[in-house]
Image 1 (spheres, rainbow, N blue to C red):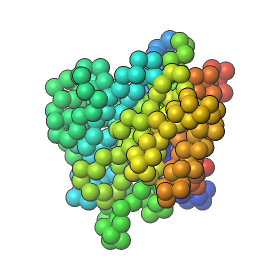
Image 2 (cartoon, rainbow, N blue to C red):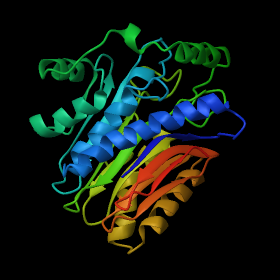
Image 3 (cartoon, rainbow, N blue to C red):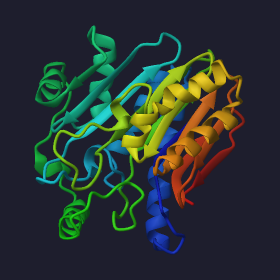
Image 4 (cartoon, helix red, strand yellow):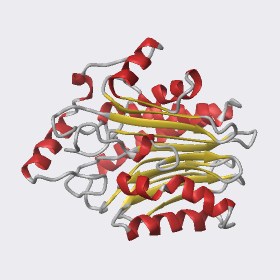
Length: 301
């Protein structure tokens, strides 16, 4: 299993030792929460969902509780889940009240004939299905409000990789279960000072989230609009399926293509053989992985 908490132009001196420890703790808790599902023989879909819920509940990351703010001060969140075994998938976009957007995405996958629901109707669907909702105040982390003030002052839209955007990190998870099935999930609050209504790659199947048992499970973070433009998740699958690229070769090619269009970010992925890839074309990526041998890796840079 592997998870990410965002990629960006990060420098090792940017965070204090206490901040680094806090980020690593958040990643470790999410990784353990997800991997515990796999230890019990649970499905890859359950594992990635549980890991992303943990990251959404942590205010350090740009998803759920820690989401960044739109230009008008609202929080609008996106998420998606995909099962590599069945090909089933679901997403939610531009939701404002769901405490855990990834759970909304999971319900779209399992309880509807659709693949993506958006806006107030997606919020209403989640609430009707019993998901916990929260008022805007729950999502208003002071650091995010400060970032919006800064972005407005500079008349800029701050991406995950912007130096001024302090800790604005999309989250995601990929996993393989004991049956060899793959799954991926991604969740984000988007970009600071973004236009209301903007949809990220996180909720777009084939862009920031993708899973197919014959190739890989894939979750991206970074310049989401370029990942959408490049259809990066499906492209990685195609490179492996049709081009016979290895996991590492395919994911590196994806990052090269993103960079060629002015984008930055990172990718986590797992192949059908259980190989894990965690790579980025920026200064760092908050990431963690744990394999069947018990080998754990938690890194920021």
